[in-house]
Length: 226
Image (cartoon, rainbow, N blue to C red; front, side):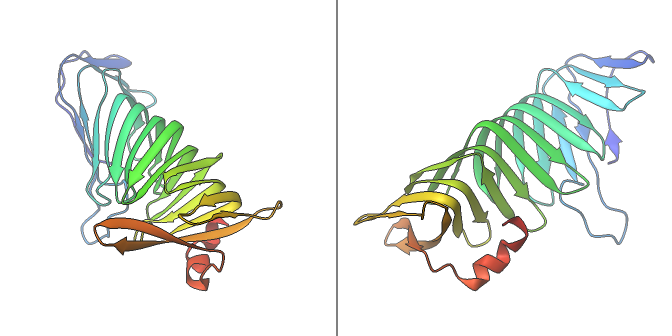
């Protein structure tokens, strides 16, 4: 990532800047397609330190991130990053094609176009509210995988894992699950199974239709993650 910085500092192993905003941006080479998270812009909310040896930049007062390619936006209490490699953040609110996420921690693997959120995370999007231990957003494929026990409140369900297609809004519950419908409750076999939740518009409401007959197209969509 190319970096544009405006700082007051001494040339030492660590560079300290007080109260200045920082932008770190990366664009593709001329004629090359832009990769997810390669066009990140990072703005500091206050202090920043830079280790000239390792390239690690720390924003202890937090900051914000915007990715021009995916539309992902992050606001965080603390940010640590190495240009072109990774970004780590704590106390985050994240928004994107997947919805809005609140989480304890976040890591973006720039090379692999992968965003991972962990720790008391909660996602909200059209007709869906989910809590889980971890979330992995595969930006190239536009697929989100929830792990570590997943609970939904809109609609009401729980599952070992959940996969979300951010393009269609369709969901796959994987492993052991229980889904509370309006008229009946659907449960997996003891060994686990799969339940498809298809996004539907019902009047002014967005609802999910549940079926154990998972479409081949959805299975193919998620094949790499099952």
